[in-house]
Amino acid sequence: MYRFVPFLFIFLSFVLYAGPLNKGVLDFITSKWKLNNTQQEYLSQQKVLALSEVETKNSGQEFKLKAAALVPKKCYKAIRVISNFELYSTWISFIKSSSYNPKSRLLTLRADHTLLPYPMIIYIIVDRPTKEGKYPFLFPTGLFDGLKGEFEIKEINNQCVLYAHSYWKGKKTKIPDLIIEVFSETLSKIGGEILMRKI
Image: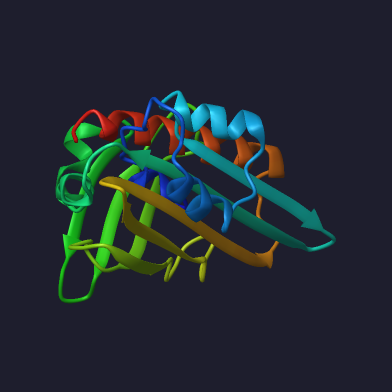
């Protein structure tokens, strides 16, 4: 079975701030992602931002995914939810099972959704979030073997900001570019919206 799903949908578990973005929050996000006016408005309307870009060139394929979200609460409340990896299968319907081995730092998920080309098993090496900071992650095996990324949790003016990105480049897969873009963006948003209600 092929093993791939965007890691970032796990960490988009945030209730977004419904009012105008304050300068500190906006500066932090736009230093990493040049948001247009519509994207800024989406954040103010409590929407998860996710952008996937996939490109095939000759025999190779390149995948990029980034996301941003804002919780109008202090970070410890958001971290308390997103760190509960083992409960993801209870909370998110398309995650059928979830487990975490703290010794190996291995998060294992099994996902199935109509948007996915087939059921997927995802292996991710990552530290369990316990505080603000940067958390690198790695897909050690699977269809997108070697995919790397990082998510950052930062508190600004009593609000919790999350920014995340991932990147992979390798041999062309059997999945068309558009299919990867659609399911990675959509499931990132769906997963985030489900988890944000838990905060």
